[in-house]
Length: 54
Image (cartoon, rainbow, N blue to C red; front, side, top):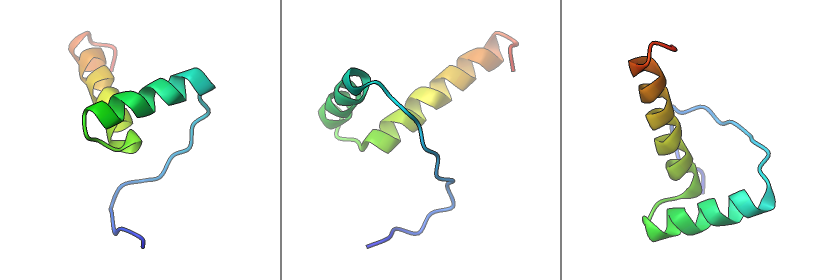
């Protein structure tokens, strides 16, 4: 069943170890892997903006 969303889909290549640990972290935080990645990217963007990089 597809979920309606206004978000864009992206694909990424990850090392197997990174993927496995990210999945474990997402599960510990009761999140999907996609949600965890979005949160981490938003934090990196916020930090870059604060530092004047973006």
